[in-house]
Image (cartoon, rainbow, N blue to C red; front, top):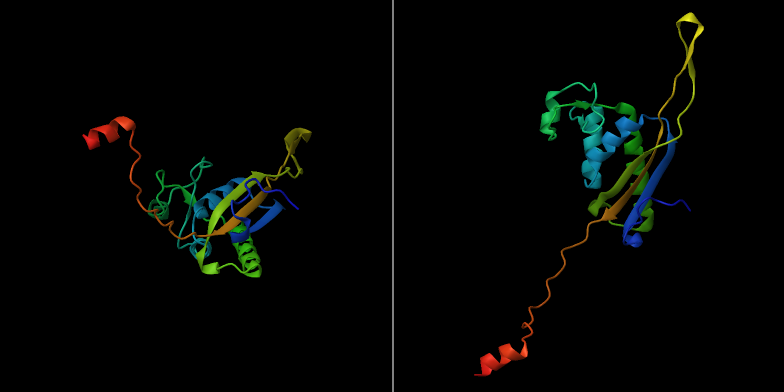
Amino acid sequence: MVKYAREPTNATKCAKARGSDLRVHFKNTREAAMAIKRMGLYQAKQYLEDVLDHKRVIVFRRFCGGVGRTAQAKNEGSTNGQGRWPKKSVQILLDLLRNAESNAEVKGLDVDSLFVSHIQVNQAQKGRRRTYRAHGRINSYMSSPCHVELVLSEKEGPVPTPEARAPKLTKRQLATIKA
């Protein structure tokens, strides 16, 4: 059994999925994951499919050095206007969402009321290659893979408000009422 960073409060109402050592860029995957956090399952899948079709954009908020600006980013609530369409990262997240949805169906959960309650992207061990430079030098040529984990949870209905009770009174307040 693999340990997740955050265990759900009610494990019977959740479905989990994870991928380890995925050959996708960590920074792109992190930004795409933050874009679908707290979204409903179908909304998240539709959003990622729209990103693949270049109808919507992944907004880059933290790792945004050198990222170009696009008009679509303003529609997604970006403050800096920077965004990209990271195809490989989005495809990996779509596959993980489908996997978690399948796990939820096996558990007998209501797929229509699922939402992404937890998603986390961690850096994995870098892959080492080398590139040959001028004057006989060699530099490292590292890849930045990542681990991704996500939890889908069922939305809970509204909590009924308890009946209003009479407030407790002190002895002094009771004495003033009687007098």
